[in-house]
Amino acid sequence: MVCVDGFVLTHAFEPIDVLTPEQVDAFLPPFAPRQVLDPADPLSIGAMVGPEAYTEVRYLSDLHLRDAGARYPRLAAELQQTTGRALPAWEWYGPADAELVVVAMGSVSGTAKEAVDAVASDGTGSIALLTLTLYRPFPTAELRPILINANRVLVIERACAPGADGPVSADLRSCLADGRSLVTVIAGLGGRAVTTASLARVLRSAERDELDERTFLDLRSELVEAELARRGGRHDSGPHALNVLRAAGIPASRIS
Amino acid sequence: MVTQSVKFYQVGSRAVGNRLLTEDQRTVQSRADRSNALNSGHRACQGCGEALAARYVLDTAMRATAGQLVAVNATGCLEVFSTPYPESSWQMAWLHSVFANAASVATGVAAALKSQGRSDIRVLAQGGDGGTVDIGLACLSGMFERNDDVLYVCYDNEAYMNTGVQRSGATPPFARTATTEALGATPGNRPGQGKDLPRIAMAHDIPYVATATVADLHDLEAKVERAMDVRGARYLHVLSPCPLGWGSAPADTILIARLAQQSGLFPLFEARHGQVTDVTPIRRRVPVREYLSRQSRYQHLFGESPREDLIAQIQHIADATIARYGLISKDIQP
Image (cartoon, rainbow over all chains, first blue to last red; front, top):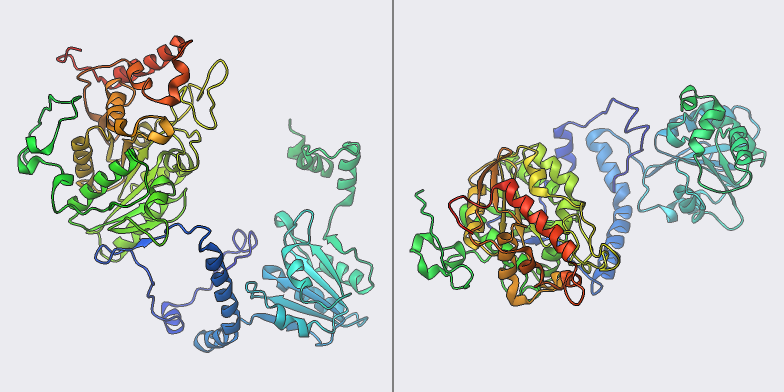
């Protein structure tokens, strides 16, 4: 499964460093699809599978994906050998026994690295960054031993799952020993900039244990408070976006 | 190719057969060397119009391409009754993806064949009215607009039959479906809604658009042949009665399709580049009542307190369609 970081990579970054066809051919085996649409050798592709077999089909999908996880390190090494590109399943940045481990995925990782550097230079505690590249299968068993020493884990979550932890937080939780605290920092929603300064600020709060388990980076609480007050405690769906934009003073929101 | 139009004066007697024709004028289906692309043994209901139409369409397209044909299928009855894994009735290269994207997958298959230098292999996409006029319309419109080299065939049975007869955008006014119950002042499907996809296809100015029914299988085959003579995006809309959803006798499928055409409710025409180039005139016009009364989906219009007002509305639709396409020829006396 190939995942792409939405918005920041799909909408805001233009240069793409594409491998040459020769590099790709050297890495990938020749393209030989198992099934082809060929009038000379006709096949029915995509036939309907019902309850008789679907459970087993999904079991096998899961098995194959987990198997791909076991083969990943060897494939990553081959990729590096052929193309010079390192693509480890995850990257650890900082002391191995860091007390606070920051977990990031995708385009926010660069900013996270700078924020971790800034906080580490304070010298107040030990901090490390774990950057995830392999998302499925999730490397639970591999991450468990390296997170064993972490007192606190902070996940920078680029998604908000109302009523639940974010997706990366939920996966990470399964790697932690009992009683370890996990803090979710929801950041970058709707393309809002994730700045080094803001991130460093929450990391420092996390070091001091002052961070809520669920924190929205750069949340403008005064806008939320104003909207909640305006709705008089009612929880209807309402035109929240318009009201928040009006309270924030966005000119276009005043045109009616 | 020399063609000669043959008039079947037995129409209505169900006695028309290939034996009345010379060898070269007989249907593809009557030939021993037909491909049987949709083979027997599938799970369609008795009297299924779609199975019959698909068999004729694909065998004709297979013959027109000397077997160099691949088919892409939308989700729907045709897909479900033909391929319950590990069974398959398709004796041809066939691919099913999902409900919405048959036209886009066909576009991709055509592009892949072109890039492999195999433009001798032609692509046919097919689906029911749900997959075509509702769920897959955006993909289909894109295929038309790009003029991709695909013949898209819609087998129109006027509702979602596979999932339990729910209304689609092709369900006609006042027809009862599971989601348009025969209740209230306007029972059944509300009038004034729905989509006329052949006209939507024509609005894209694609090279070829045609309509057909399972009542005139020679005409259906001829239209598939003509569609395969053309490159680019082509659309064929085939009225395919559904005994289950329409509440009609399985033995009446052909008759009902014929009545749809003869009442004027379903016009038979061909269009090229957005212009109607040929229509099949109605030779023996019938009132819509004859068509409606044979289907239990319209039974609320008849009975003890018949809804003559609603039948008159449907008749008005038929009259307007006849006028739009000029289906009553001046030399044919009704």
